[in-house]
Length: 416
Image (cartoon, rainbow, N blue to C red; front, side, top):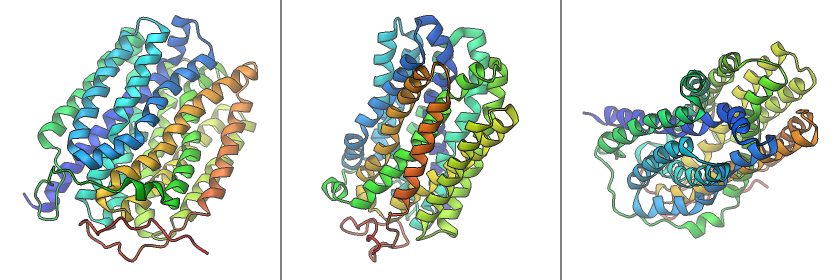
């Protein structure tokens, strides 16, 4: 089997793992109305429940990235998939609201070590020139799972209830675990599995890297929009637009399809058109998403809402791909776990803040979503400003291959 075939197989296995990870976290969005009814909790409480997952997820980002650098990507990926599959089952077995909070928090802790390990595996196995596109394909599982989740959740909830939905969904994680255990090994330029020997890494250098933190802040703003929008979209459609569960499930797939296209387009644009100018791609697409959100906020009719959802989903996924193209291209693979942990910390803090703040604003507005959507709009505008300050020049030490390039290079020299 040649190098290209080995890398293709490895990317395919990672794709399934990413899909399982996203699917099992998205399903709760469809279950929220039923959880609220069973445990008699309002939108503010449900927002806190969503935030519990992201609190655990954010907590593990920096230590999880360090562990991936220290012990290797493969071990951390296997450990993470096994644990989040177990806690998917646990979500369906929760016996009280408190137990569900604890389970979702632990779900986030154990799933949160997967992305940093995967980013490290990509940086070890693929040339720099193609990492943006490879990672965009893997991240396309985000909108893909967004498309699949409502289609799968609606009949599962109808047949087995929201608890049974979580239990049955855990089988996807089991499949991903088996595939990675038997076919998921990082590939070197020689076409052989990468060494599993500890590789060290310089987490202190990454913590001092200003541009990494700027990208993390942009990631925070983009994911406030992503998670706030997606978390409350099914409930918004049921309560404000008065759609039933099956119609919500169908309509909710449309942004997912647009997001898949946006994610793939973002990787191609980052590698081919905006190489060295990713900040302009970031700023433009975030601004387009903000403008669409503004229209949706002021013209809440079903056709306009659907059109704006599609534009928002496409735009934020292009931005998301551009965010991750930067560190993947210029960070030494030995430090990729720590660097991706910092960048991913931004998105997970957004996951904590966005659903909870939106839930509070909905309650404060007596059921109106105006204040919640205005919060998303404000975060989008701030993200555009930060994105335009990110330096994008390439360090001289960055090569075109995937071999370690000595001490960790700076992500970018700040533009003067």
